[in-house]
Length: 189
Image (cartoon, rainbow, N blue to C red; front, side, top):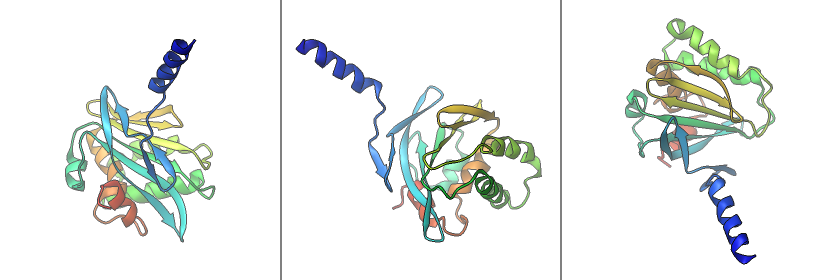
C-alpha cells in the first residue's frame, strides 16, 4: 500500500506544472512550451492604471535577455503570458489598448499589418474576466499562437508581426504607466 501511495504521489507531481515564480500575487510556471522548445521565465511586471492593478505579464525566452532590441529582432521561440487581475478590464478596453500599442510600435503605420491586428483583436472579443490568461507564443516559421485560457484562438504568421506585438510591452518608450511592467518583463528589476 505504501509503494502504491508513493507511486501515485510521484506520478501526480510529474503531471502538474511547476509554478516556481510568484509575481504580484500571480503564479507563473518557470518554463513554457513554444512548439517543441522549452522557454524560460525572463521576468514579469504589473500593468497599473490610475493606481489600480490591471494585469500581470511575464516574458519567456530561450535564454535570459534584457536587451529589448535583441529580443524583438530574434527569430526564436518566445512568449508573453498575460494574467488578468482586475474585473475592470473589458474586452473593449483591452482591444483598444492593444490597437494603441500597435500604433506606438509601428510609429502609426499599422496599415501593412491591419488584417493581422484584427485577427489578434478578434481573439480578445469574448468577455474578459479576472483570472483570464492569454498566452502569445511565437514559434519561428509558424507564427504567433494566441491562446485564451488554454484554448487556441488563432495563429498569426510572420516575424514582423511578432516584433510589433512583443514591442507593445518591451519597446524603449512604453505607454504611460508601463515602464515598471517593461522593466520587470526584461528582468531589470
